[in-house]
Length: 96
Image (cartoon, rainbow, N blue to C red):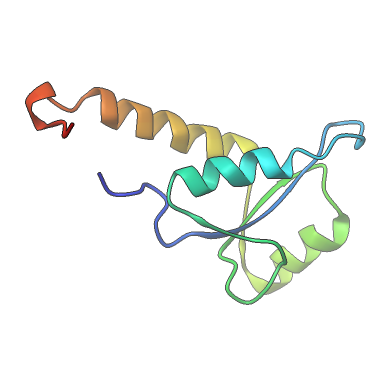
């Protein structure tokens, strides 16, 4: 099965609504599991910024550089699509 996010290089900045809890690692792992690369810094290789309640400077940099700003819902949608694709594979095609 081809990774659903192959070719994506993401920078993740995800915080709780009161900005006390950093959930970036959780979402970064989900992206890695789906085939994306995750960068610890916002560099020139980044194609997507997963953003929720992050720093304004990150938002501005993404807008200025034309990098896709996506929400945590984008990550969840891709996880659901991946689950759906796996669940629809005929049993005889599944490798054990």
